[in-house]
Structures are given as structure tokens and as C-alpha cells.
Image 1 (tube, rainbow, N blue to C red):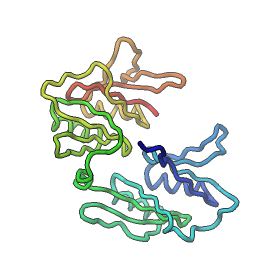
Image 2: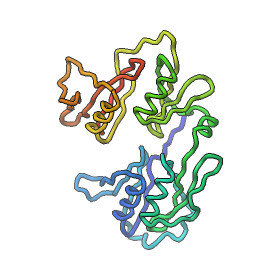
Image 3: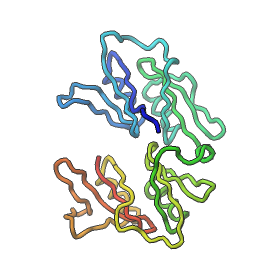
Image 4: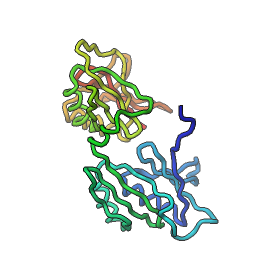
Length: 252
């Protein structure tokens, strides 16, 4: 088993707030600041990978050797991302291009740091096989029905592997394996918890797509069906997929 994980990248800058705003705007993320007093690092969370920005006395001016370290940032819509980068005034080392159904482009941020945006096609993802990391899985009644729900209703990427299972990409770090079972009986407990930024909006979106929010006698629900967690606890709402598997969405 691996004994180390790369979870963040620190970029030093004369103006870390400006640099953080650039990446947050380019990749539709939020800027947060570490430390209770708001004087820590500027942080942009890219789907579980953290770009951190600080100011150092021994680092100033533009990066004169951007090719030495190039973060690869996987995006959902490479053309839309490239358009945002153009609006932000990013420079292009290698403009966005399609190669065998995949997209790659190398750009520069305001400090001259290079980064690459990437989109890998379903065919290439499937060719590389299921995730090698630890993952959970659960059964469904019908795989085609499940694919439509997780892709079209929940907006997740679904990869159909040759062995007759599907990988539901909850986030880029989390894939759940889903497999068909003729005599499937859904569990009476939650099989998947999905963290979201705006729980109220997510509930409204799901209801608008015909999803019913579950209500349990043991909890007090608001008018949307959300259970408010209170101090230190997440707000949460439950619903089911077409196979009756119980899922939840919870605030982060």
C-alpha cells in the first residue's frame, strides 16, 4: 500500500490573493483562508486537491522557469475552461488541442507558472481500466437505468467497463463501482453520502428532476426535507436511486 499522498501544491507569489483569485475564477472554485484570524494561506480546493498560495521574502517576480513544474488539472469542459482563461488574460504555451478524443492545453498564470488543463475521453478512461485505489460498490436492479440516473440526474460521469460493471465518478478522487443483480434488494441504510457546496440548491435541482426527498420520523425536516445538523454537524437530505438504494447529500 502507498504510504504517502500528494494532496496540495504551494505557490509563492508577490500577490498570493491575486493568484488565488485567478485559479478560483479559471476553475470555478472558491478561495478560502487558513487560520482562525484569516491571515494564513489562501487556498483553492480543486475537487480535493488544494492549491495553496503564500508570500515569501525569498520569492519575488515572475517565474522564469515555468516548464520545470507543470501541474495537470483535469477539467469537465476544456473549451469552457480555455475561454475563461482567455478572459482572465492567461498566456498559452500550447493552446488547447484535441488528440485522439482527449484535450490538452498548457497555459501560464499571472506569475508565469505553467499549468496544463486536461480532459480524458471515456474511451481512454475505460482503456486504462477500473480505479486501482480502494473503492466501494453496490448493486442495482438495471445498469442502463442506473447509468441514466447517475449521469443525467446527479451529473456524474459513468464509465461502462467491459466486465459488465459501471464506475460512477462521484469526484475525481472517488469512484463507486456499480453492478447489476437480478434479485437486487436495496439496503435499509445509506449506501452513498455525497458532499455538496449548496445543499438547498441541490435539493431544489433534484426535486425539479423528479427526485423525491425522503423524510424519516426520527428526524425533524424543514420544508425542503433537509435535516439541519446544528453546531458542528452537517445538514443532510436523503433520496433513492431507481433501484431503491438510499443516497444522501450533505453540506460541506
